[in-house]
Length: 114
Image 1 (cartoon, rainbow, N blue to C red):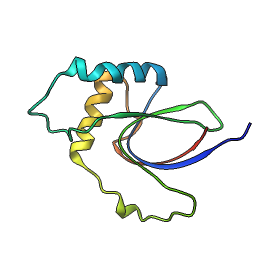
Image 2 (cartoon, helix red, strand yellow):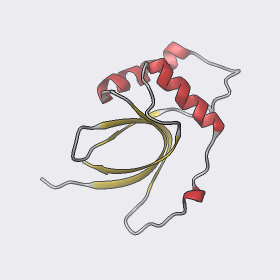
Image 3 (tube, rainbow, N blue to C red):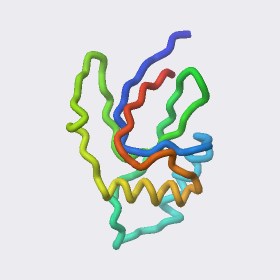
Image 4 (cartoon, helix red, strand yellow):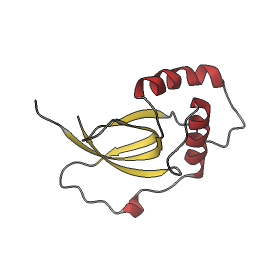
């Protein structure tokens, strides 16, 4: 069996002690549970689930933006801008899902083996 490598830049947060299936189910229910928030300071973008596989157990990340970095790519970190609206969306989603974020929202450089 061969492994495929993906290298991604994800604007998101890693969730502590999370199982991907539980997070997936909760994210699917989130829009129905939350309803429309017209005064929301968040970005209005959908929060997505990402799983990161490697040598140890799978890690769970929720994120708003994702860019794949193909082999040979070289990008400056300054190309990836931060967003207070996205930060608020991610914090609110993590809290609603009942998980603690391992760090503040930001761009995560992810190397995934699957």
